[in-house]
Image (cartoon, rainbow, N blue to C red; front, top):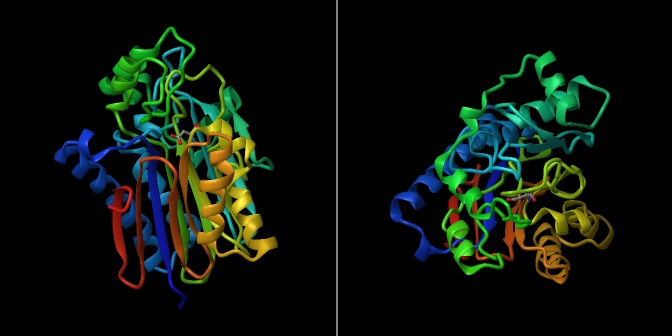
Length: 321
Ligand code: ASP
């Protein structure tokens, strides 16, 4: 039996301890721990990495604290359009959904697209139609409503600004403060199972006040999500546009495959060098087939956690803690 590992993230950005109440900190950490435990339960029962990442991401999608599924942010038109992807490192099978509405768990839809359609990605109305045909659970607008995200959107509604769910880097300082006080984010999971197989999944509501139809990095295979048993499984979070341009997740895999870097080394190069050069703020979690995990970010914080069969169990928010 090889070392098995699950890692999760709940978004990256300007997350500062001084802005966080002890209750909120606890709530985030509990949410991350629940997701880790959901994934770990699958792995310890000899389940597949693919099932583990799905269980972890479903747990985060159902948690209103995080910007995915239920807690998705408001777009420019006041609607919630969600993106998600899942990838199996054993055979490079992948499924993704973009700009879909009403689906309770977009990661389940991504998986259904992977296993029950000849396609990799479906978007918008077609994705919703596919979800209905497959009997996936749908929810009304009220399910996706949260007062704090509505207020967050109100701060920049009517402007052309978009914001990472937890970012403060907006032009207007008062807007920055208002948006920055809300610190929630995109979610993702990566896992190595007992058989040395790996998988990745990512799910998001995208960026607050985003343009109708805007698609971020999360559902794009190779940008926000990637898994290949030969190298790594990666799930990213951050400002999606630079992550797409840098083909971020696949670049980590390439550095490992073609340059012989370790997982951690490759992630460091991509996050602290390549992304920084194009103002790509955010981070990523990764595992390799030996169960090694790494969590690297260039923002002030990243909600994250890792648990493995050697007894490691860490949930962190800020740099180093
Ligand atoms: N990467 C996501 C996007 O651009 C946002 C995030 O990670 O919070 O849609």
